[in-house]
Image 1 (spheres, one colour):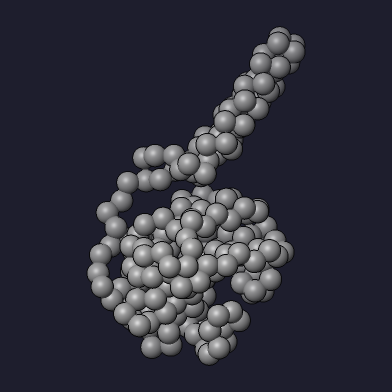
Image 2: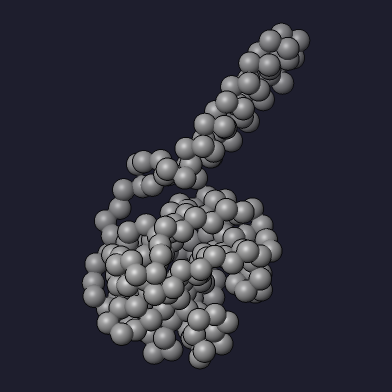
Length: 218
């Protein structure tokens, strides 16, 4: 397992803060209140371990196939419904939304191989990620992929805690399924807007893994 490059600064700052807190506790708290000093040490170390785990990149065998769509992130499927596209597409699309908790791996991956047609950042609000309007009102980054004449849009959506979206793609890029497309820090969701005739192979509340779970075929 590796640590994602987006976490280097956060992890460094966290280590410095934890070290300072524990040194101050050691000299000024523990001598008079040893139990309290131990509690502070345990809590800060647990928080540091959490931050380290948040930026983890576990080793996985990614799915392969020409007509499949894989999950772009780890999380839970919370929406499968037909919607009117609010961006790029003028027609109705099949929306699949995946909620990412702070405990999930937060690397985002390309759901298909193909060409990037569109890549656009949108500033916005920070509603909780499961709020229906988070898809259209929150900070987000949208990417459109084209494969064999078919197109899909993927939105990285910030949540109440996630306030930094990273996306590495630009129009004209040729990408491979399962490779990194970006990263979202601290809880969020990812929406996919797919053609209406897409065959969906997942269900509501199903747990999925980025680059591994097959969401459907198109």
